[in-house]
Image 1 (cartoon, rainbow, N blue to C red):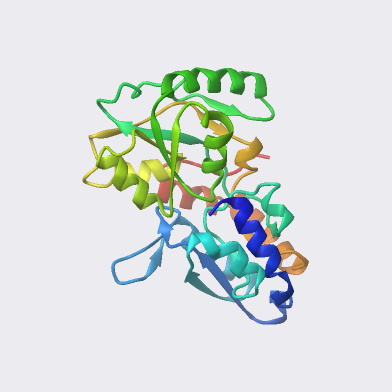
Image 2: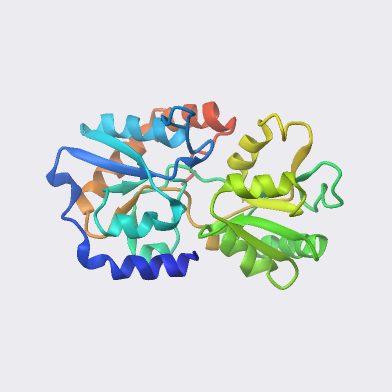
Length: 281
């Protein structure tokens, strides 16, 4: 399901929206539970990951009791709008298109993307690998780097998770030059990459790093290409909220800023990603 279709479903559900969440002392937070290391399910069904730990920390700071539940990615925005839960913490980037339907807290992380490919791939050393480009503030350089990447991956098959900013990014810049395959989960495109049914996976850097820690990927695959942020990739990852829940958004903003200021976001980021993804104002 594309972001546009997700938004269409969400708009249809608007009439079912619940009243602002802070009328109650309990907040329900939805996560995907299948997007390691952001959020994932342990074998016993227990939710774990960066956003699970951060959600618990934010709830403590806000002085509310929180229930964290797993929800399929494809329906997560419509379900929020319909009032089935109060907030989303699921590696969701803040984009203008999503803000037509829901609201966001301030960002709690900002991470670049990249390609995951087999070590012996002919695109294992893409141009500008390791460099970072902002699609708005450094647009000229970003467009030049994208052109080099576009030429290098021409004719390849690229896997992305559907209804994500990475899917939008791939269609915007590479659709005429590569075959883009969309998957319901990151695990599905990882399996196809391992089985050589696709040539590369495009995803955010922390997710790719997590894939490389799996025994079946370790030592056999590599991350390549420059990393891009901003523009259609959004302004970072934030808490998704219903439009009109202004008090709840203010509470999340205050808690997130406190977690950034005292180093909690950095600590959790280093723990789960091995990278500091703290947003820089």
